[in-house]
Image 1 (tube, rainbow, N blue to C red):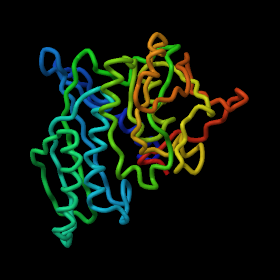
Image 2 (cartoon, rainbow, N blue to C red):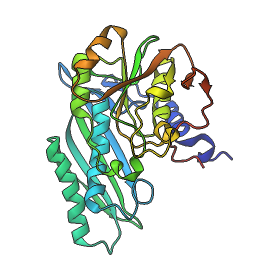
Image 3 (cartoon, rainbow, N blue to C red):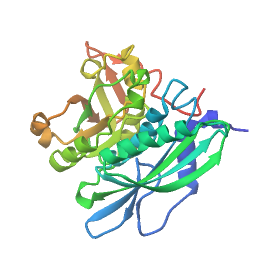
Amino acid sequence: MRLLQDIGEFGLIRRIAKAEKISDKDVVVGIGDDTAVLKYKKNLYLLLTTDMLIEGVHFNKKATPFQIGWKALAVNISDIAAMGGIPKYGLVSLGLKKNTSLKFVDELYRGIKTIARKFDVKILGGDTVSSSKLVINISLTGEVEKKYLTLRKGAKIGDKIYVTGRLGGSISGKHLSFIPRVKEARYLVKNLHPTAMIDISDGLLSDLKRICEASNVGARIEQSKIPVSREAVSLQNALTGGEDFELLFTVSKKYNNLIKSAKFSITQIGEITKRGIILLDERNKNIHLKETGFDHFKL
């Protein structure tokens, strides 16, 4: 009997997607991207996403309830940003221990409401249940102009690969307080027209692999160009650590001269190729990749 750990998180997603074939004419994108995409208005698509945070997996006992609430909504907003969109309305579902203090719950919601105000997100309701550990799930809608919708598929051979910000070391605290890159994504889709985009949640290599698989291409990245954060303990951590929530995107060569006009950090780390993902060292030699990123069901 095969187990979840045999196929991993992404194998499970592919398995579900294969069984769940959607034929609804209003569904533009179903399983397989940062959000689902539905037909909505004449010039707009509706975006739908949801993320679940579990105590002991996505945060530990050192995290404050404010930080947990902030992160719970921030990860959803980050998904909307990766599609080039604007977040709109959210629903919050909580699993709480019966002996949880009301002060804890108040602080949790203060974290949610604080980041919600920052991005003009309206929380409209949700659900609460009793649980043996803290569980928080938020569902979020957003919208994006049809001309700005950016998917994981679309990267073409010769496109340059870029990331925003710096990578690695998020576990030291950034993953609980990061600012979703909505403003940056909106600039990108309006000015640089990315051919593909994703937010880095499971690690640079893992999420680059998703773009490559969706676009049926490969990638070559250079070790010396990867923007490693001061908190990262190693290059490997910057490659696979996850929860950076920066944007990883590809851009056609014709827009490369516009990169410098951006008023935020963007770094070119490589180029889209025909097949395979290759990491080159400073001598242009191939570095063997042992792992690609975080997977919920792998040992």
